[in-house]
Amino acid sequence: MNAGVQDGRQDAGYEVMSPWAEADPAPLRGISPRPETLAGRKIGLYSNRKRAAELTLRAVERELLERYPDARTSWYECTTVNVPEMLSEGKARFEAWVGGVDAVVLSVAD
Image 1: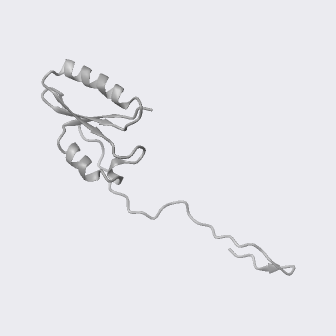
Image 2: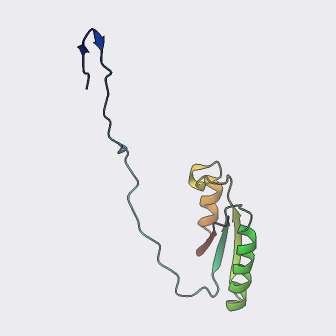
Image 3: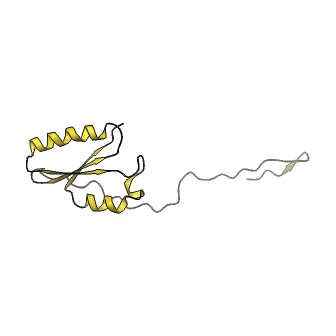
C-alpha cells in the first residue's frame, strides 16, 4: 500500500506480508512404535550436553540395566548445544548412531 503525496509531503508506504513461510515441510510420520520390551535391546542415551544431562542419563542407565540386565546402552552427545542434531555437522554421525539402537532416551537437562 502506498499512500501517495498529500499536502506537499509523501506519506509512508507499507507492505503487508504474510507471517506464514512458503516452505515444503517434510511429511509427518508420527511416533515410532515402542518396543514391547527393553530386554535384550540396545538403548540409546542422548545427551544435549547441558549440565544435568549426563547425571540424569546415568541414573536412567542404572535403572534400565537393573530392570533389564541383558540390555545394552549406547551414548551419544550432541554436536552443538541448542541446535537440532540433524542441522549440525554431526548429522551423519547421529544418523549412524540412531540407526544402531532400538530405542532412545533423550535428556534435555538444564
